[in-house]
Length: 211
Image (cartoon, rainbow, N blue to C red; front, top):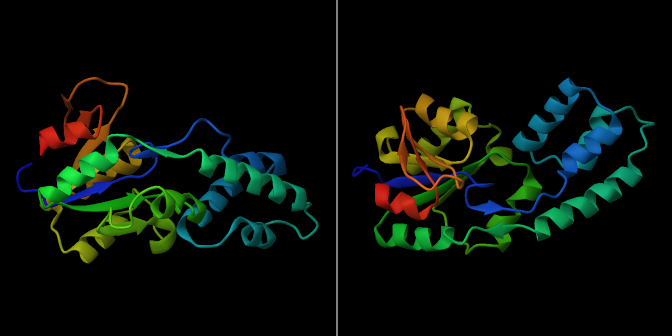
């Protein structure tokens, strides 16, 4: 990996996490008894637009659907979850070393707008050189479009980029499809493990050993 210049990180469960609070969206949707297909549709809209939950429900549900109390509960649950977020202790120290070694960094993540909270409140503003968030660019991993967006704004070639993330489907396989080297972070494994087409590491500090 000596030719790498840009290290792209997924966000949740890669460098930021939280205790197991109920997912505010899933909790609300379950109380509305919506179908699985509508649940997937709403989730995709939330992660690929800046539309907030109130406007989305007013657009997609019958006008007489009682949502006021649910929205109050949603806001409370969301605030509790966001306030519980924490940054893994190996992240900022790893970023500091990467910057000293002249690597550039990016965050590439599927999320709805409220979950961008850590970028604004938990880490320094200059942590990432590039930010590609699904709700801002209108595309989700594993879509090819979001990787094209990363390459277009950074001007780096596929062989110069590494993707680091916890998800096989939206990080590892997505990166492989775009001919980008993938590093899977598995914090329950104590080793660096070389697989067919990707590498597993147990902490972000091990990323430095690979580079």
